[in-house]
Image (cartoon, rainbow, N blue to C red):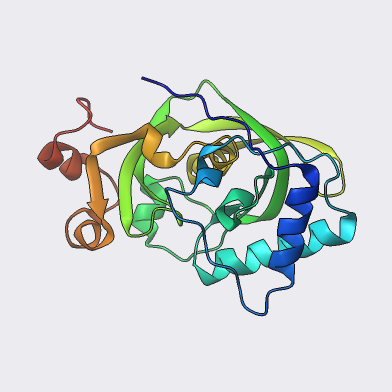
Amino acid sequence: MSHASPPTSYSAARIRETVQELLAMDALPPIVQAGHPVLRQRSAPFEGQLNAAELSELIGLMRKVMHEAPGVGLAAPQLGIPLQLAVLEDQFDIDKDAAAARSRTPLEFFAMLNPSYSPLPSGTAAFFEGCLSLSGLQAVVERPESVRLAYQTPSGDSMAREFTGWQARIVQHETDHLHGTLYIDRAELRSLSTNSEYAARWAEPGIDRARRELGFLTEPR
């Protein structure tokens, strides 16, 4: 059964007030965890709720929180802000076999506003995913291997880019956040593992052994 995420109840003024409160904090803000309503609502499209300076400062703050976590993406709702904004960057040095199996290549930092994606005809890929808002858990998610992303830049330009492999997975994960969807909604629930069990048993380039022993997905990936 699918469930439509309700729209945020935040007004433009409340969004701006929330952002200003975060920017005034002396320490980095905490990442909102699953169960908070902001993660299950459709965020408001960015329509000038923040001025250019506020938007730039918020993006800088989000990047710092993402690096500190650490993670490869962070959506504004994860800081309690129901606004269609996310930051993405993947510069981690990982095992070359895992990188090859997952088609994982470095992703330069960028911020996206009002994003949407559509699958490209390249099939799907299934791998373990985690989320900074579901701390301590991972699960396998099957996603389109390649997508076309449409979004606005912080300067207001409209962009369209194509992503494949792990970069496409990051793009989809963060865009989903802005529409009230968590990776667990798309996951193979029989694969759900704590980080410690994942590290002990399933931390390998592919998912074939986990698929067989945990009993999810009928065809090997």
